[in-house]
Image (tube, rainbow, N blue to C red; front, top):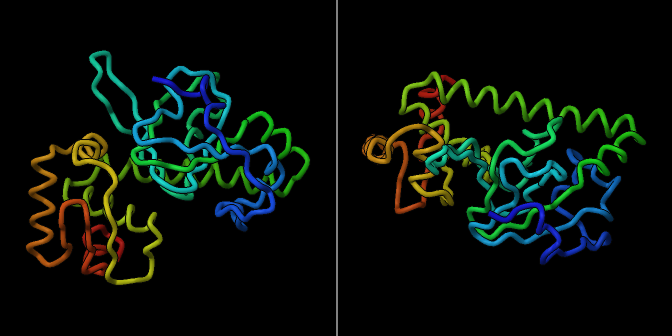
Length: 236
């Protein structure tokens, strides 16, 4: 797998006069190194970084979707997360010499590659920027911790509902009671991530559809009753 050692291939330097979607109020600290940020177009199945690669960069997904995973000695993948537009990849390796996961584009994706050392040096020039980035790290850790607890301790139906509603939220569907989106990951990837067999996933999706809570057509999902789904997750 080819990761960071080839990061200079097919890169596009950001034109600093153009707006970048992630440089909003939440991530304005990236203005500190905007001229040094690289926009990299990763093709489907292309590796961003490998497990045990030297940790040099962090990654911000501008468009597309990335999956992070580990592999067993016999090559079986164990997916630890999916990063969509507006989310980070590589933060799990902050403080370590090497990456602990593999990271791969599930679809053609535009990703901003940020040299972590240069980023840290820039942050030291602005206390407010450093504080905001530390909050980003804290929020990421808390979100992952909460999600892990849900996925470990919940029944299978709740796992799937939480997963679907999380994907919908990541797609920007927040306020509507009728939310729809396309799943970019395969049933196999979802099975690995949720630790639920593909057959059981299909059975639960069919049950939710029969109950009028969702509509499924291939990879297109419609969430038809958000209040009821929230209640089933204990979020009412």
